[in-house]
Amino acid sequence: MKDHTESVLIEFDKQIVDYETILSKWKSISSPYATKLQYRTAIFFLNADQERVAQSIAGDMEHVDIEPATRFWMAEQRHQNFLARL
Image (tube, rainbow, N blue to C red; front, side, top):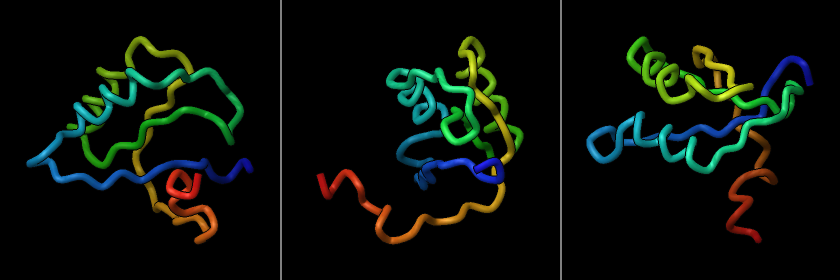
C-alpha cells in the first residue's frame, strides 16, 4: 500500500462552513499517531490559502503530512456509507 493513502473527501459549501472550521473540528477529534503510510494522518489542500490554513491548524501536531490534493479515487461501493450500516 505504498502507492496510495486511505482518505475521506469532504465537499463543502464555503458559504455555510469554511475550510478552517472543518480543520479545527478535525483537530479537536484527531489523534495522529501512526507513521505507516496506510495509516498516516494527512491534510490535503487545493490552493495556497488552504495550504496556509492547514499549516496553521496542524502546526503543533506531530505526524501530520500536509500535501497538495491529487486525484481522488472513490472506494468500492462496499466501502461506502460505512457508519450508516453500523
